[in-house]
Amino acid sequence: MTPHPKRKHSKGRRDRRRTHDALSLPHLIACPNCKNMRPPHQVCPHCGTYRGRTVFEIEEPGEKS
Image 1: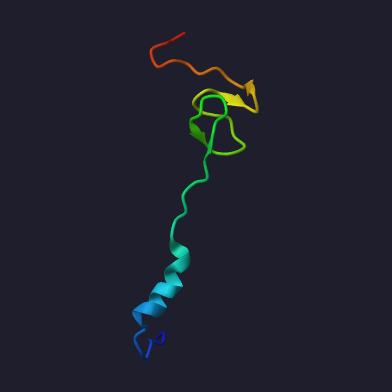
Image 2: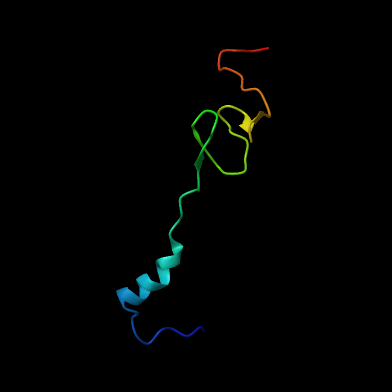
């Protein structure tokens, strides 16, 4: 059988152990073209540009070709 703790760990000790468990927010920057927030070093999902050039065209929701 596995050993069990002899004493209860305090709340402070438990919380200090959990300090690194928090989730961090994703880092976002403003797109220079459309000013919407996007991840850095990726094509903007709103306007389709990256580093000043259009990578792909964004379809409007009502358009079907």
